[in-house]
Image 1 (cartoon, rainbow, N blue to C red):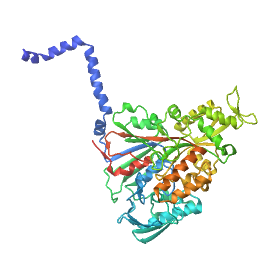
Image 2 (spheres, one colour; image 1 turned 180 degrees about the vertical axis):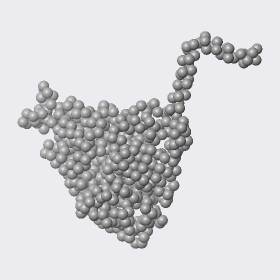
Image 3 (cartoon, rainbow, N blue to C red; image 1 turned 60 degrees about the horizontal axis):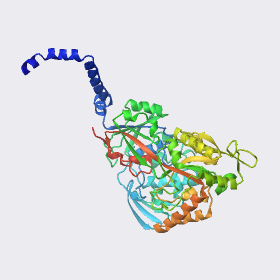
Image 4 (cartoon, one colour; image 1 turned 135 degrees about the vertical axis):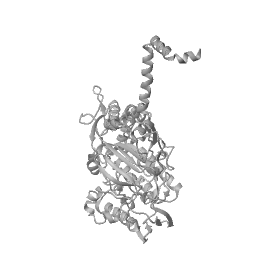
Length: 553
């Protein structure tokens, strides 16, 4: 019987199809469709068909490369990614601010004002020229000179009064004028080759054509740079040996174009602060998402205390009371952790007993009335002495994320009786016009603080003018004294006491409104392993272990 069935199975099969048609054909179509879908979405199949080289990683970002010279401080994330891949720091620092070996691999503190450093021997630049102490001395001296004599925003600004001496080709001495608790972070900076740059005029150092052909001594060397991105290949003479031999980094003008690249399987890594802008990730099962809170970064609203209206701390406090931070993030669709003060909660100097200025419309109304503003019953806005609507201008870098924030802030201020006018600006306007001239009333801006709690450069009255970083123009003698004392002390408990008081004074005076610490998201091909974004201070810190990345296919 069973033998007869197998002998005559075509007849039975044909009869089965006829009795179940058209359901049978629908089932077959669905079955085949699933395998077609699997073929298009499976990362394994995709790589097998394309024959993709697993020594290559392709990353994409919305933005472009603005500077290849790491001697200058930059807020552009693409620049910082480029630096981390192509250059090496003199030393690294860990999440607690302690030094880690890099170009310098040994050091000794001979006194509170003197340090000796020993360089790795055998390190060469990407053109195979040996790296020596002469390169290091030239880098630090040039950055200090550019900062002091030309007012350039280089890392030398944090090294005022520091002298660097060459002892031999691989040994250096650093001499400080005074003790400096931030010394390790101040020297954790990228080096460039002296023999390439030493003849470049310092009058045009940042814009020199030499910067178009960058040479570092990092894990990767530059193959090409274009308007579309940059291509790097592994530097075989580096002391580390990454399995990813080629790194491609693509630039996109907007998320629509980037989403097209994702859909076409052209990208292995995306980093973004705005996860919602990357479309339909759930439709692409070959991606995974990692995230990290950047506690050393804060989104703030700076009040320009140079303007008469904002010189009154009560007026600034009233404006702060109008902002519901938790609702702000929800309405704007932004991922982050609420900020409560100048020092992040991950720091040993964080004052956890501090009470931040929280949302309080009643408190705001009471202050406005005490300052002589009367609220118009018809329009709902407060009026000034000359019967004009209380109107303020908010300057900000024009991105969709910032625009959502400003729209939400505009509505909160409207509900509180204040008209907020938006002033969107491009990157060049912010960096070349707003920050140098301090031409703003309110400025929505993101800052990054060091791991060490020192914030002398952000809030001391001697740091008010550009290119210094006291953007709000804050000036309070008690805060000055605390910041001066804490940055030169090496006693952690004494510093902690000073920083606790500093946080209280600054929060009460409200020269800024603290909004949130942003989250950064990394969208990765699921087969890319070794990627680590834990405990990073900046997105570019993800490259700290790029030599350990590999494809698991």
